[in-house]
Length: 294
Image 1 (cartoon, helix red, strand yellow):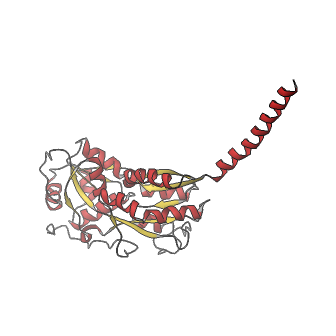
Image 2 (cartoon, rainbow, N blue to C red; image 1 turned 90 degrees about the vertical axis):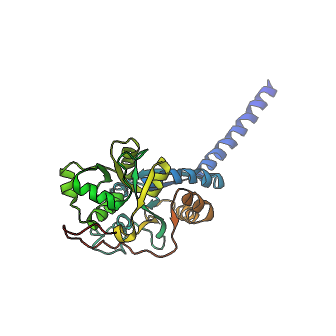
C-alpha cells in the first residue's frame, strides 16, 4: 500500500512539473498575422513552410485579398502585424507620413522605419488556352475594344490591378464606362477572380499580374510598360498595432533575403533595385480621337 501511495505521489509531482512546462512552451510561440495582396498567395504559402521550419516558435497566419479590402479591414480594427499591398496607394492610405491628399483620413498604422518597397510585378494581358480570339498585344486589344469585338476581364476600381487597367484604358483613350455599358468589360473583386475568368475561358482575355498568369498556367501575350500604367510596386510594412513588432520585423527582413527572393523570382516577381515613387505616375490623358500608342 505504501509503495502504491509513493508511486501515486511521484506521478502527481511529475504531472505538476510537466503542466507548467507545457504552458511555457505554448507561451513562447508567436503568431504573426500577415495581410497580403491576393497575387502573393502562392509565393507566401511556400515561404510560410520555409520560414516556420527555420523559426519553430513562429506561426504565420495569412489573410489574402485585394489590397483595398485589406486596407479597410485594418482601418476597421482587424488584428494585423504585417501588411503587403499590391500598390503604394493602399499603403499610403494607412501611412501618416504619406501625402495627405492620398491619406485623406489621416490614418496612422505604419510603424515608423519599417516600410519598404518589397517587390515589383508586371501587368500583363492574359488569354485562355489556345487564345481563341487571337489577341497578341495591348495595341490590338484597344482596337478590338473600340470596335466592340472582345470581352475583357479586369479588376474593380478599388483593386490595384483594376486601377492599373484603368490607366491602360486611359492611355489608349478608351472610355471605361462606355465599354462596361456596351458589355465589353466584366469585373473581378481581386486579381484571382480575373485570373479565374480567363482560365475558364468565360472571357476573351484579362489584365492580371505576370505572377498570377504564371501560377495559373496562362499565356500572357503582352506586358504593359511603365508609361502605360506606372511601376507595379508592392510596399510592405510592420503595423504599429502589431502585438509582436520585433517578430514581425524579423519576418519582413526575411522577405528581402535570398531564400524568399528566390521564391518570388521563380514566379516572375522582381526584387526592388531602385526606389519607386510613392504613387505611379499617371499616364497622360489621351483625346478620344487619339490613335493607339505604339
